[in-house]
Every structure is written in structure tokens, then in C-alpha cells.
Image 1 (cartoon, one colour):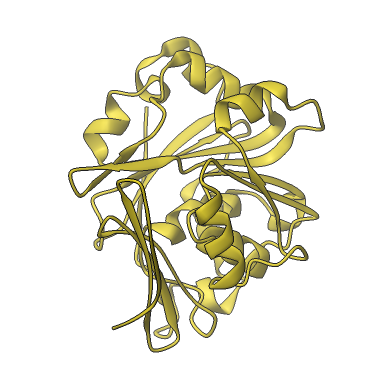
Image 2 (cartoon, rainbow, N blue to C red):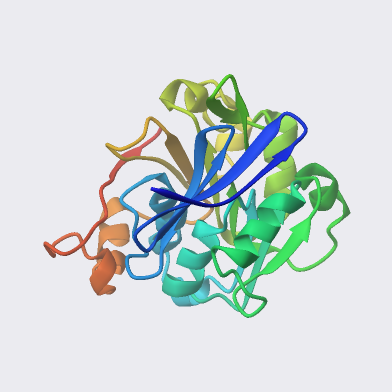
Length: 249
């Protein structure tokens, strides 16, 4: 694996590495992002952040907000498979945004990149709501990834404020225990605001990705929509998707 670029900023070391056509972003040795133009399905956690969009007809997902850009793999996947009219990525680290542009080819035609604290940006936002909101806000402590903002009731409500009436809220957690301890799982008041909640996992990671839907949808609906896209049709041997999805509550 070749190191294409590296930089030390304070206590943080950023590296972009290549493995063939795959680009990988490491922060203090922790893998934060991975994308391959030729194989946009990674088989890993980044797929899970995109998949909940397919509980609905993807054509109805026109406005998407991603909090936590990293290298921009999820932005590339959303552009490739969903093609929303508006795709905004917010990240507090300008270095991440530069990497997304230079090494992951996140062009202005693909997404609008914003350097800002997610809490500040979300509180100040005064535009149309989003059909899909993805919270992938992660930092790193002692070589391990952890959520940058706790998913407590206040943060969950801030996210919901910007979610359309038929929208889907997606949030990444380090593992199932972290999801189970979050407000999305524990708050009855919040759960009443959703028609359904699902948890996605993949064999390659311990992460648990929650998908909270404001309109009813089933796992059969999800599979039906995925089957319409050859690269996401798990019935095909060539499909690289590796995931399980569980109904919560």
C-alpha cells in the first residue's frame, strides 16, 4: 500500500494511501474512508450509511445532508446511486475537505462541501428540510474511532428539525451497545416520531448504523428497491454488498 500524501497537524497525522485503484484516508492510523471509482460498493460500513435511502424510491430523495465528510466516500456513493438534486457535506476539519476534493474527486458538481462545526451549522440552517440526513460524526481516541457528538435527546431533536416529513435519519455508532444507549433507542418520545427504526451491520465492522424512518417501510421494500440497481442487487454473485438489517422496537 503506497502513501500518496501525509500531513501532521498538531497531534493529528493524516495519510492518504492507495491500494490499486482504492483510496483510503487514515487519521492517526485509523481508517476513516475508502473509495474505488471502479468498485463504488465497499462491502464495509460506508455502504450502510447509503442503504437506508432505499427504504424509499431513491427518485424521491432529492435533498441530502451528510454531517461528517471524511474523504467523501459516502458522498460519492450517494451521487452515483441516488443522484440527489442537493447534496451537502459538512465537516469541521478543512483538511478532510481538501482530501475529499483532491484524492476522492468530490467535485462541486457532486456535492457542496462546507467547513463548519455540525452543531453550529445545523442551528443556523434556515433552508428547506432534507429527505435524508446522515450523521457520521466521528473522532478518534487512542487509535479507536468514537462519535464526536453524543446522540442525546438534544442532538437528535436538532437533526429531526431539519428532516422532511417523509425523511430518513441515519446515524453511525461504533457498535450495537452505543446505539442501544443512545436517545434514538432509549427515548420513547423520540421513537414516537418515527414509523420504523432499523439497525444495519456488516461482517467487516462492529459499527451499528441506525435508520429511523418517518414513513412506514419494510425490509422487503428495501430489498425490492436495491434489486433495481445491478450493483446493489444482493441476488447477483457480483454484488459486493455485505449487510444485515434488523427491525428495532
